[in-house]
Length: 119
Figure 1 (spheres, one colour):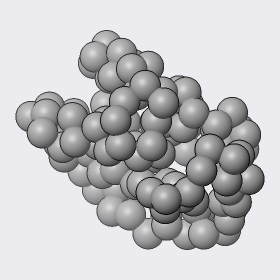
Figure 2: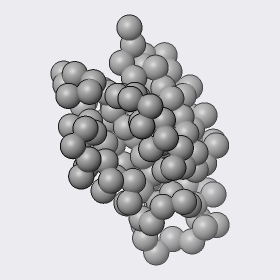
Figure 3: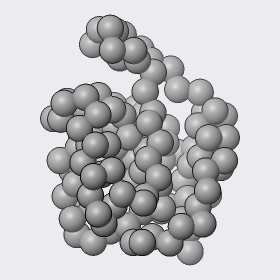
Figure 4: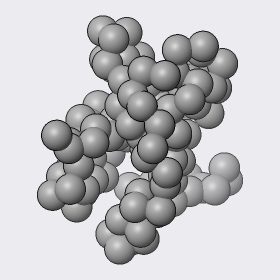
């Protein structure tokens, strides 16, 4: 069975890219916002990795990541932050951010997946 990754990003293009690039080796579940991510997790889903944009439209900056790290049940799941923005960039800049496919793959593959989902 493929290891499972939850990808949280408000950009449909980024979600598609993650699904396409990582879907060959991993089972990738994509959701568009923090509330959808928390809903999916609340149904007792335990991915091996969460890739999240820290600037989601429905949560304050980093709120999803803070909720996960403070949760007893999800705090051991690694979270990879995926953002092409600095805090000062505008919404227009966000539309044109670039994610380098090889860098994403290299970063995901370098993570230690030896933890058991649900620990």
